[in-house]
Amino acid sequence: MIRVLLSVAFYLLLAAGPLQAQDAGQPPRNAQAIALHALFDAEWERDMRESPETATYRGDDRYNDRWTDISLAAIERRQAEDRAVLARLEAIDRSALSVEDRLSYDVFLWQQRKAVERQKYKEFQRAVSQRGGIQNAENIAEVLRFRSAKDYRDWLARMRAIPRQVADTTALLREGAAAGNVPPRVLMQRVPDQVNAQIVEDPASSPFYKAFADMPADLPAAERAALQAEAREVISGQIIPAYRRFKAFFVDEYLPATRETIAAADLPDGKAYYDFLAATFTTTDLTADRIHAIGLQEVARIRGEMEQVRREVGFEGGLPEFFDHLRTDPRFFHESPESLLEAYQAMSKRIDPELVKVFRIIPRLPYGVRPIPDNIAPDTTTAYYQPGALDGTRPGYYYVNLYRPEVRPKWEMMALSLHEAVPGHHFQYARSMELAEVPKFRRGGGFTAFGEGWGLYAERLGYDMGLYDDPYDRMGQLAYDMWRAVRLVVDTGMHSKGWSRDRAIAYFMDNAPKTEQDIVNEIDRYIGWPGQALAYKIGQLKISELRERASKRLGGKFDLRDFNDAVLAIGSVPLDVLEAHIDAWVDQRARQP
Image (cartoon, rainbow, N blue to C red):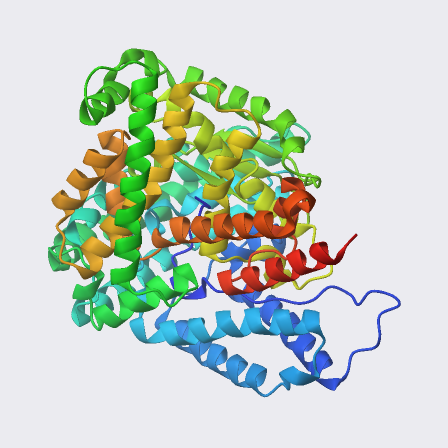
């Protein structure tokens, strides 16, 4: 999973951006192309300015002293601007553009239409989830570079703005409660404990103070002391009181107003909303019924492969007993968070030298392995990837969950690392950042079906790299493939077919050996983020289909390294755009002698 930004400005999820300087020797742009690139430039700058968190995550530090304005007036202004941008884009004559510019136009048009269409669902009224929101705003510090006094003063400015952000978040939640646009209570019951992490007795133990605990030695001692003293004062005098007020509001007023149901269909205009989300995340026109059926087919296929592994290792019980064995045998688990982290780091180093077997192009940007912050680890997934800075000044990071190592099995680590790090999300993002000839919104943005489909496809590349020599590692790969197949069933089941949370958990437990801790967190993620989980398997099936088609068509001319490079060659795009690109690539290869 690619880590989503922790900004509560959910309405800014779809970004746009500029093209790089025109290459020397290219024909001059006509008026329509000039207008298109001017729009890209303006929209990139607007996105950075209006969503400072997005700018920070992309490595742009110009707005590191502020948060997104989430007042209702600012939201309405941005939505009006989005509608105006769509009108400007549609006024450009697409037929007058080059082939490359038409691709950028189409991708941007797809994103902008979705951004405008989603306005009517007022997602901003649900400004907090169990996985992110104002209650853990400090997590953005994970990607900040604290090197100078200005870096610390910028962070202090953000810290001083927390009371305003808390007040605006409260106002949005109140509006959502009045409209019945509220999340499920079963998820929101997790939030008070997250808020409690901010209400500390000692300001130096606040999550916001972490950056001040180990400051650069080249800062003068007096300046370090002054900045630390100011941080403690802001935390004790402003941040902690703001979170106390927020907790009182959340527990006494908001939590009782949340809904007991879990389906997106139970939100205002909920059925249309879920259909919109399914189409947006998968970039297809597949219906919920069709996605559910695909999931059932995949579950049946993968169970058959799991049975083969069970027999291979000589386990005498049935598949349910084998799952229980995998979940509970102590030999499959590390004893401490430290040893688990070391194992993840070693796993990544094992994968790295094998990449040349399946790629010709290796991205230049490095990546590292980090633990998921303690304050969100109990309520989040097994791992996620945080892309590097767009300018290459910050590497990508593979974040791993060290909470309760006794529920983090060794057999899942290979598939997980292939997905989240290399050649999965890190290759996907690092390669797109190196596409200097395309607009920044294509280099730094992305489509879930492409990105997560690639991540899941990358898990299977472990076979091509010779990394699944242990049958338990193969079982881990099948468990992860099953995990994504189950998603198709339970996500559509809960949000469109009336499934209960307990039924979804039981179905997951019956068909995958993931531990109960992970399964409960996963099901709650699907409840709180409807439709997103559908993208993984749908994207993987499309990429795998394209690989099989290319192999059959090219025969002896097919080279897996070239195919994998070609998939990543145009960045993250809707699946139909990827299919057209690969078909053209195959045609070109077929014509070569």
